[in-house]
Length: 189
Image (cartoon, rainbow, N blue to C red):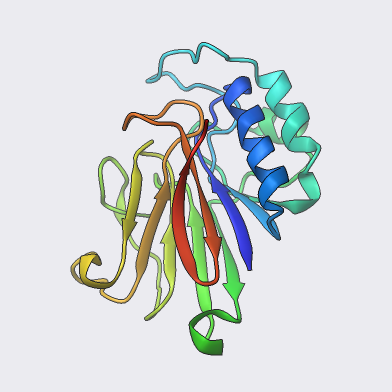
């Protein structure tokens, strides 16, 4: 299974265009969007390239490949203009081939209802087992914790945040890739 994982686009059209170029290059099986797609939110400055109508067009062009969850900035009006479901609090993908065929659940969420308690995400864990992954956004900061670096009390669960496409708060716009059972960060050029 190959995924592109992106979060917190916040209507930033030029950066979304760069994400679309990466998606075209990577050719993932699915694109996982972790919320806050169109609106910049009351706590964030307006992105310089803020053009949510352009973001709508780009995302709708790949609607059939998107699995999305609701961020804290999504509203019903967003669902009215997007051609894929985006109002679920979480979604779960199963990578049946991961871990030598033992499988892995990949729990997708934004980070404001479920999250690992890192940065400003909530500390509200879903039921996950050994080898599963909690994948979230919301904080606009990249995170990859696994193995020896796992969250205390949740050893064996990988924690991944791809960072933010539109309003990075850790110095670089980014997204994530999941392939061959591994998560990695990629910077947007």
